Length: 67
Image (cartoon, rainbow, N blue to C red; front, side, top):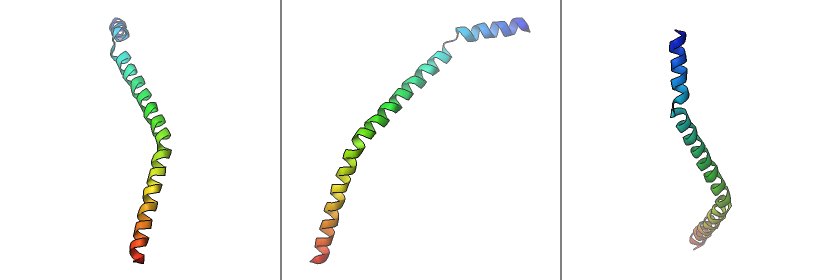
């Protein structure tokens, strides 16, 4: 039993599956950080654009109701 456990531990130590999973996890984490930073930088500009559009639509609606 001890010999079988030792053999399994040695084969597990030689396996590259865990390393690949860690690499993919790191890549996924970096991509997530990049997306969060990009959205944070662009977010203010998008908010300003929507505010302008909202103001234009409200002005158009109030002018149409006044006519």
